[in-house]
Image 1 (cartoon, rainbow, N blue to C red):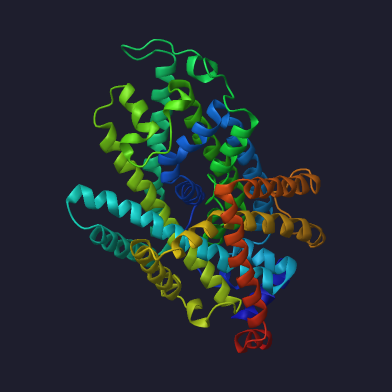
Image 2 (cartoon, rainbow, N blue to C red):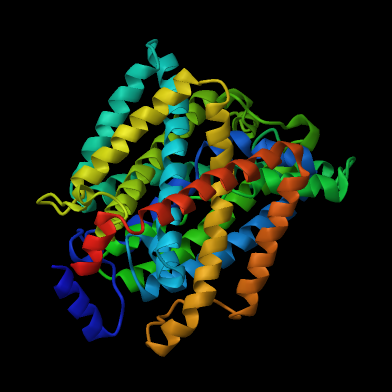
Length: 475
């Protein structure tokens, strides 16, 4: 099989991932788009938005624009690579192409670790809410949901894509409804309401009440809000026309995420004084709930609780998919045990999915166990993992672009202003790291991810001459 794949790649003049020879191809562009939205629009949008607003006031919009611009550049670079060389390993594969085994190995397992830890936190949050609804212990809905999503992910990929599409669609519909209601409130077009004006936006406290330092703090609070849309390029390998799907999906996800986040924050800052907003621990405290209550929407708290649970479960579902495909890709490259490269009759990497489910259980259990210091360290590392991934995506694109051009692999997705915009993006990411190091609350993220990533890089060199890798070289 590997020889046939290699021959096909040689015939077309393009490299390909061994994973493309076996995985199903049932995903459509709409599935990919919603999968990216589903992973990026989590509970953080509904519960955590207030942290950035509290720090920066309405000027948090500048923080979102800066963070969004960085992510747009990174996604455009990743989109260029993914459209040229569609692969379920995505940036892990491109890191290996650019810098060798150590980069592919460490990036793949770093992102896998990130998603596994996030999955545990999300399922814990969703299970706590559902347990309260039904008056049962949280582990019961957690168990039911994990088993249910195992079934979804073990089915044909087209079924998974359809399920995730409608799951994410509900969240998107609620956000669109929220934006419409918010605009009507701002302009006084609902009964009992008058034009709000700029009283809260640039009124008594001004647009930037805490100065540039407040914007910097807000930037750290929102820097990773767009994380998760990278999953689009992992899933694209299972679409009928990967290059076309990536081109359309990357653009659509970037545009919609930007509109949803910036639009939501704009509505909130217009309608609520910034100093009345803070981090929300419950749906009732969410600024989304408070604005829906202004509009006299009945059952606003219950509605937002349901949406938050859906947001958590949708992201959980997408992350099971992404982790299983990453492991499948790495098994095909001999960076994971070969058993995880096996496919079912439906062309689903069953063993890789089961591995993800096992560690999802373990991660949920870790949240409940909460050993002193360990969970904080791991979650701190997760906070900085995206920085490493973004840096390596940018470096890989800058390194591989000349090779892609020589081989005629560049498709319709191209990084703008190459190489200068790519270099500027790297400088901006380094600026984020400097900000994190100067902030006491964020400094631990840098140190934790440095330890985790350093361990993975060291492990990559320790395994480079393993029997698994030597077998790959001779197969």
